[in-house]
Length: 368
Image 1 (cartoon, rainbow, N blue to C red):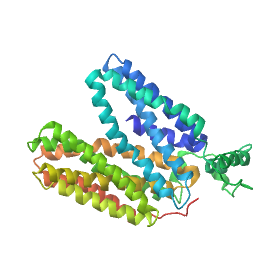
Image 2 (tube, one colour):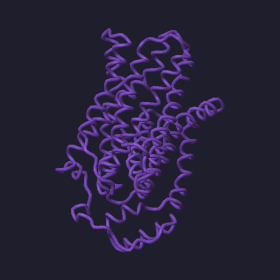
Image 3 (cartoon, rainbow, N blue to C red):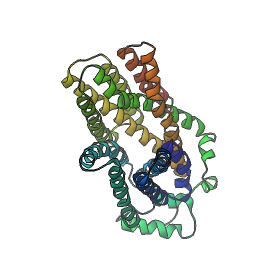
Image 4 (spheres, one colour):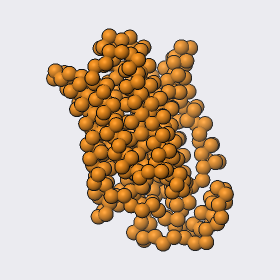
């Protein structure tokens, strides 16, 4: 809930007040939320601080997606954004390792304190090392815009700009309504629906794999290790996707990985009884599902103009969190209704297929 609210509310903030400003606000919210959770003495208080943390994470996703797109050139944009996306599975792997060590010597409070300090460490890093996006300055105009752009370009080792690019005056004050105006409304519907349906497939994999594998007769520790392989496959998949995104058209490439996601999830549902083969299957599933997420994030940046980029991304991610919440519930109802693993896997994996079909109708726009 917090992530959904953060994406929806703070995405427009990033378009109006800047990527760097929003990233710093999100880091502050996440830091406060983590420390607050560590000091929590009851469930309601803990939920409040977790909600605040989620707000920061959701806003961060929208802001850094726009920033990554705007700080990279056309040739390397895909790879840069893929490297951003694979931070999620890599963080999941490293976080799991650290949490195990902390819980071995401390309590759950210490886990949140560690998260708070780790997040806080990035506040000075962003403050001193991350400039505002020159593309944002160019589109927002304002006093001294050209001078600000040239200061950023100088820090990045580029020649100064001689003037600002022509811009539509209607884009001067971005608002969430911009993504529902003629020319963007269909784009918003398609990318949001595609993200929603694919996230349902992804979170079925993440939330149900351990329980399903335990029901197969394997130890809970072995089932938990499979999630590490989902993350490892996701990190590799995102990186390789980024490499190919510099050489191939983005939309067809994303459609291919979405189909691969559905096939891998269906393979998992075939009832394989070997832990070795299950490991291979979930790694492949992580590979394709996370590669598809990388592709969708790149499409968010590509299909929206600068003044609506973070807003559109935030809206898609925010609504997509509904798919993350629904996925385990829908799968649970299907199992309770008597459907077998293969049927449930095919049904939940079909979300990726629906996303692929939706992308067939998506029109890409020229890069800013």
